[in-house]
Image 1: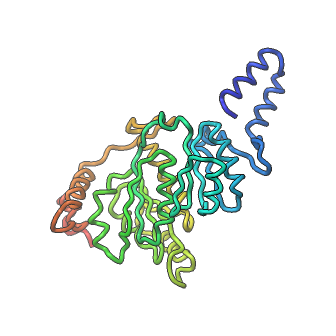
Image 2: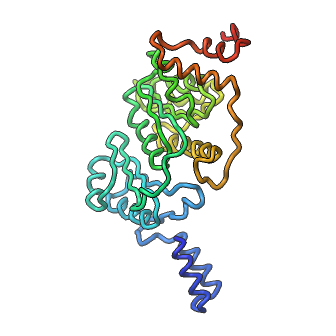
Image 3: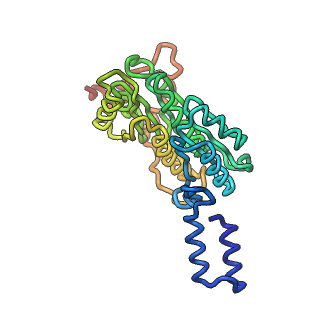
Length: 312
């Protein structure tokens, strides 16, 4: 129920047209109303409760149902994100509801309200790291989710552990992130490696990419769940949306703590230690070194000489 609808109901009660009991009943009915859609309850109040609007899961829904839900969200001045939308269904939705932005790789569509241009600029910083190009559909779903949330997303693709030199070469692109999404199939080793480089949450996404013993992503899932990196948490197989959403929540809270975003419940964030700042500067320098990146041991030694020789 929108603010305008609540105001109209309150005015009717003040005018004597509704009793307090009737007002309460209509408010409850308005929150749970199907919004004119058969078998659908559009949760237009989710943004007020949770910070972001309801997201449409496209599998099993017709183009007509998706378009109708999107129209209801847009009428409430909310951004629309739909996931798991194939190209045929996206084309059908576009006929019913022009102005969609469709990502064929991610299988997502987004629609912004008419006044989206007046909304605040992207806030927070999240990196989306993909182990291989076969993982891109899941990584792109995470990136599209972050774009819908208004969070700035950096993509780092094809840096899996089979080419161990690739990740350190690009460390400067993600070491300052508020949160990181790491997408990997096969044996799922990359999130642990990334977690060892950064002082932020790493949301690991196992994918179903791999051969027989990969077991549709279960092998990667179990490997990630057993990560020895303390900052790694794991979501479901192929769940790019979930990882993107969680990382986006962290990033918007971090941005609010820096005074860059209007989030209601602000959090305290401890300042970076001198050692962390030195490591960041070293990582940035490594990104542009002609002779290649320094090792993690060299980075830590430069940050704090007392750590020389401690790495095993």
